[in-house]
Image 1 (cartoon, rainbow, N blue to C red):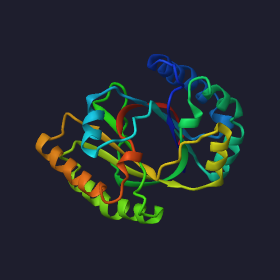
Image 2 (tube, rainbow, N blue to C red):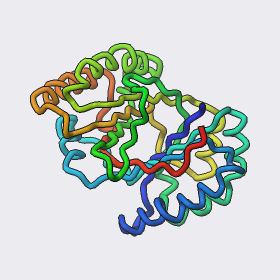
Image 3 (cartoon, rainbow, N blue to C red):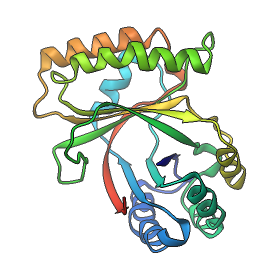
Length: 249
């Protein structure tokens, strides 16, 4: 599977409610109807929550980028499907321009590295007690992409796994960016100026089962290690809810 992450900032002057309607209602319907010709296997939207947890997550990490307004996640079964599907998406790019600030909305292709991945389906739906934490990150200037990814995967992953239960974490994925000609074409289509991230971490959290003392301990351990490789000022963190547009896997 090939996965696209598309971080969305809404157009200037567009109210949050109007943006949600454009993304979750009109664009979702258009995308679902176009799934065949786009050769998509799966599509999920993540709507950013206006939640005190966003500030609680960002505060101990210092001055971070503002949360994005939402995320579009797309999957294709093969590279060939992705290439053909995105070639057929010119009309969708035009529709996006009505509510998405293309210049400030980065997108990239990924490889997934599951860290905690239960057999059952985990989705932070609107009615679910779960929230999905998004953490797109960029590395410190002193580190190469490869060095930062190695630390993230080999050093940071085990730290998070060790504290997962106390933090109410039921699923944890590292999603690492892969530099591809397709990404460059997608950015050119949209005039994207914001640089892509190294990738993003995503966790599904059940706050009802988190232990406050253990969550604080886990948070301190996570941040202490993040300081070794993440440039917080060029990274962002927030929580949201998922909507499965379709899933044909």
